[in-house]
Amino acid sequence: MRSVVGETLDREGYMVIPVGDLGSAVDWLKTSTPDLLIVRTYVSDMEGHDAAKYLQTKCPSMRVLMVGGLLDDKRLQYREAIAGFEVFPKPYTAGQLIEKVKEVLATARGGAKDQGL
Image 1 (cartoon, rainbow, N blue to C red):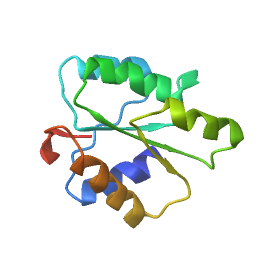
Image 2: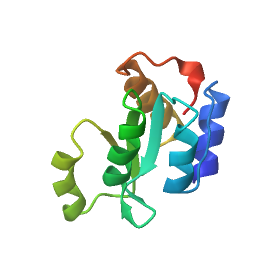
Image 3: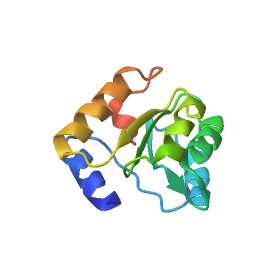
Image 4: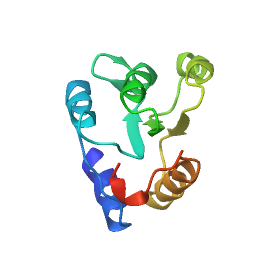
């Protein structure tokens, strides 16, 4: 799924930097300031919103878009805890993803499109 999302956004002119796990993301954030983090609802043995909150402490200006499968009742309860993060449940089309990314980036705190995702 990551490669399909990456290819879709790359075709739209976004720089996409895929990272496979939380540790790699932390290392990458030491030298980079991305505009957007796209994260699943569950990452590296932790809830996605916990991972996103942690990563956002490393890069406060970074916006977050959480994607995931159909959110069950337990996940719906997390919406309150996710405060400030966009939640984009699957299924979605490539066009819907691009529109959601544009929407989230439009609310970014000063990030330029070419700094990467």
